[in-house]
Every structure is written in structure tokens, then in C-alpha cells.
Amino acid sequence: MFSVLEELLRIIKKKNSYSVKKKSYTFQLLNNKNLCLKKFKEEALELYNAAKYKNNKKNIVHEAADLFYHFFVLLQLKKIPIHLIMKELKKRQKISGIQEKKNRKKNVRSK
Image 1 (cartoon, rainbow, N blue to C red):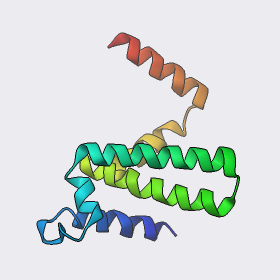
Image 2: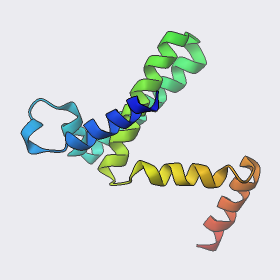
Image 3: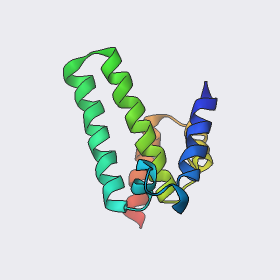
């Protein structure tokens, strides 16, 4: 199942080539930071609205897939490899969410 995500990540990475620029929505997102951020924000809001108001599983799944795609494009745009996200998630498994939030607030204050 996770091979689908791995394949999507490979495709997104490959789309950042000038040979696909005229045909590729992904290329457009990767080469326009404002568009990429705008689309990510739109997709997050659409998922939020689908979950809050529509309560239709099919619609929520559709919007979640859109958000995953735009999230991965945003990571690629910022040159953040997915393994860093996985490493952070793994680290957080060792502490409660409540404690992690407290730690984050302490780090923000000390900066």
C-alpha cells in the first residue's frame, strides 16, 4: 500500500524537469512557490470542509488524496525529503502528544 506513496514521491521529483513543463501541473507547482502554497491551503480547507460539513466518506477520501499530493509537492518544492518527516514522527512516538506540544512551546520561547 505504501508503494503508492513512494511512487507518487518519485513522480513528483521527476516532474521538476524542463522536458515536462508544458504538460505538467506538478511542474507548475514546483516552479511557482505562491501557487504551490495557495493550492496546499485550498486543499487543506477542502478536506476540512468535507470532514466537517459533508460527512461523505468518498468525498473525504478524495480531498485527503488531493491534500497528500499537494503536501508532497510542497515538500519537494522546499527540498525536504520525506525521511525527515518520518524521522520526526518516529521521535514523537516516544512521548505523548501533550508533552510534545509543551516541549514545542518551550523551544519557541527560548529562541
